[in-house]
Length: 271
Ligand code: NAD
View 1 (cartoon, rainbow, N blue to C red):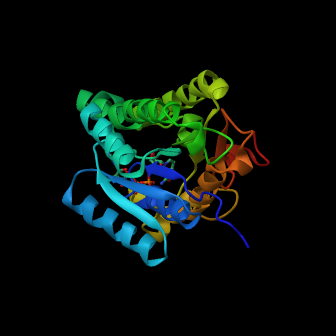
View 2 (cartoon, rainbow, N blue to C red):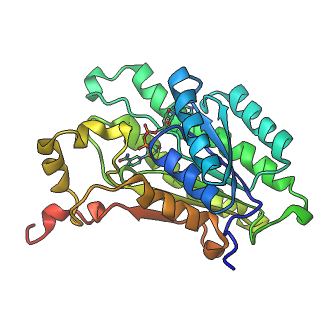
């Protein structure tokens, strides 16, 4: 009989009330993990997170919704403390929550800059630190996989491709890239694996303006050699693999999942 890949593991997915985070929470739960569906502390996000939790429990999985603004140290600490209280341990962190605040540099306010860095970079630091502390407290009898814990960042192709008018976002994702690799180097001897996925254009609320009209979609598809926009499940499948023992020898890697966007299709037959 097929036993579930992530049975008895406990996972936190940040920003899991929509998009890639929601798909990832569902995918991890369907592989047997108990999933903490983190959401921003707003009413809309709570409702959406609870809908995801219901979808998981209706399908026979286990999940709970936990509110925390991941850019706030006290709220992150409270979420991890609640996780350890309720489930006794943590095995997987998916650092997914992220925001965009586009503006030309001459019009970018310090608040626009700071908000993106606070969520996309500082938030990932706060959650990673709390996760590592939890992993290091694992008793060996609780270990259910090759690693004592694993962290997966949701970065972006914009850790690689420069992005005019989103300089704050590109700076945050570029920061995540070397934060992830440095952390992987630091933690490998402790049997903690750290990796990232770098999505291209994925159909979620964050970039709805890029795919909402036929005209915008046609423009977008010029950037994607594989000829379609990505779906959240294209990313969640890879995250499940990175979290699992099938990827036990993988650490410090950024897995680009972009339908070829970083192949710079404008150079095909040109340049
Ligand atoms: P999304 O807007 O659906 O998801 C982002 C989630 O983060 C939302 O649920 C939001 O409520 C949550 N969030 C925002 N600030 C938060 C905070 N302070 N605390 C807790 N949660 C917070 O968009 P998505 O596309 O699913 O984005 C998920 C991740 O994927 C982001 O890091 C984004 O940068 C990255 N990404 C997305 C794409 C894409 O094309 N959609 C491409 C590359 C990278």
